Image (cartoon, rainbow, N blue to C red; front, side, top):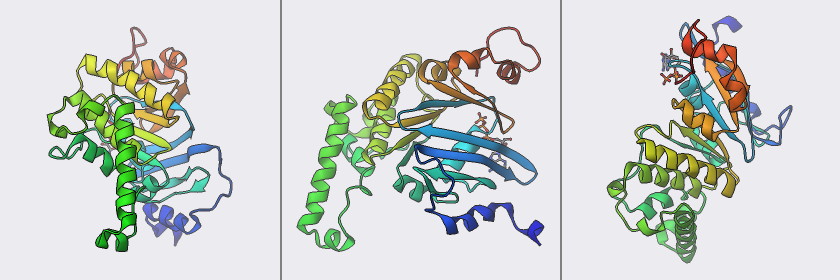
Length: 286
Ligand SMILES: Nc1ncnc2c1ncn2[C@@H]1O[C@H](COP(=O)(O)OP(=O)(O)OP(=O)(O)O)[C@@H](O)[C@H]1O
């Protein structure tokens, strides 16, 4: 009988126990254990685990098709896992939807920048904080004082974020008029407005030129240190990850083949083999 149960509904069943603190690491912002994802006959992610503590700066790399995006989507609730568990701050969130993960403090950015081009930079950042600074539906509909108080608070927080990320001068500018690099910062600023505990960045350097990429590296490092937010970066650009992250995970064919400091990863045989095939000469690159 059990054999006929679709593998993807088990996390939904596990939701019944959502909120339970049994057997979970309460220190970790994200504690993912043995996550797997099956697409038909393909095991795209096979037993992936991650412990992301407050203040961590972790990179997830791997060759094409290794399962990075799938793992990222499992962590953010975009895809349900076929097996495994995910806890956020000690609470079991296995099977939770993206908005529930966001409510628990998991913010993400997308490979393709998704800003509202015709809104101002400030309005875009404010969009990220509406869940956090919102009045009741009743107050909002009637535009009661509590609605305006929440709106003012959100505006102040968003202005403060823009100052702290060096974009204060663009607050009133149309978002679509900014350079690609600055738009990427606005996107991260918008994620910060939700007051996240962890920020998951999906290929943040995609589409950036080398100087924008260099600036982005310093920017992510500042966000991590200044806001004390745990950061996970999924990235094709291995040089970016090696220069930015304190800890690096490497996926290959869905499996975690290595985890360690950039130095350890660079000389790891399994990693070199995964990137270069059987040849072990030269430098690994994404
Ligand atoms: N929705 C899907 N349905 C079927 N197969 C999928 C689906 N999404 C991903 N895959 C497959 O799962 C495997 C892992 O894909 P994934 O996109 O996670 O890898 P990746 O490491 O992010 O790759 P890349 O670096 O090329 O973006 C690939 O073989 C891919 O074809």
